[in-house]
Image 1 (cartoon, one colour):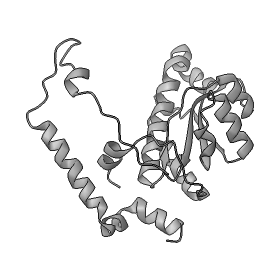
Image 2 (cartoon, rainbow, N blue to C red):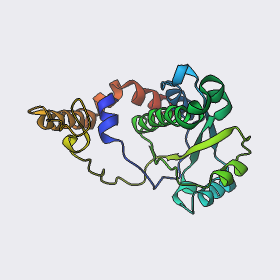
Image 3 (cartoon, rainbow, N blue to C red):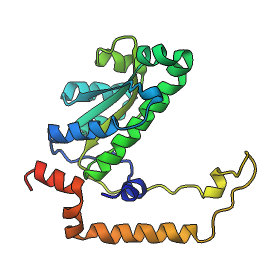
Length: 219
């Protein structure tokens, strides 16, 4: 799957089919997460794969009763090693770099989930202590995100995004960014081409990720 396809079409999924996910595919997803950049290549991210039904329900409860979390076949909890990053970068590493690095890994993982034909939702609203207790996390391992993952049982509309001129400035804050002429048309055309390409079965077969997943599942 092309990078722009994943970037434009990834969306949050909260309903999942009760279809198991091959452990090799889970491994591939986590491997993509570890390809993200990190401060000084510290790689302080840590991943916990949860399939146990009781633990999944407990994690959903810890996330303020977001019940859809427990319905996913697999949950990946992304954590950060505060001790590791603090050794390298002190207080700033613990308070900032840890969040930046794990966020980069999470986004990689979410894009890979979409590319593999799966769905997920980035959940950060949870009780840290409760999650730590459920997963037996040592004091220096901080839970950052809960990612329920499964084959989508819904196809929601993707929320709209603010125009570039609302969020972008030129040279300094407050100096309005002028959107290049024709940029919007270019993006829309690119999205149309992606949609047409990936509606064709032969294009999907040529895609290495899709081909890998088909081979993995024996399809």
